Length: 140
Image (cartoon, rainbow, N blue to C red):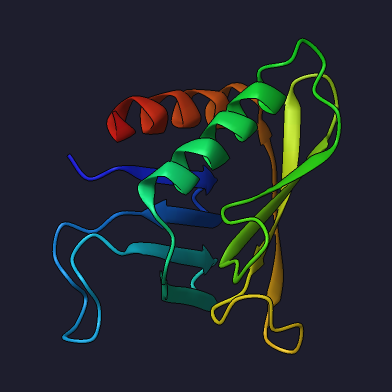
């Protein structure tokens, strides 16, 4: 099974996926991909070049630790710290059992002129927790 982390609901979501096959001749097998959809009006699909599985696992662990707290506080986590970063998630508690996200999609790394912030949610907190736990198991 291909590891895939999907955050959001049916209307608006972002996903981080490790494909089984290259998307094209310029993309190596195993490159992570970032995809997103906002009600069918906006879609994104790009390679997260240079991101390795260890970085993705550390990202998932940070998200799990923060969303697994008894009372999660606002936080942000990046897939890849200190260099070109294709995905940053900010999480904001929205009531007792809900959480909202802002996904910053940056296809060419930290180029501040080329990013999109996409609001997701609020969604029930148990959804992202279950998704993160399954994703982390798939990475092993």
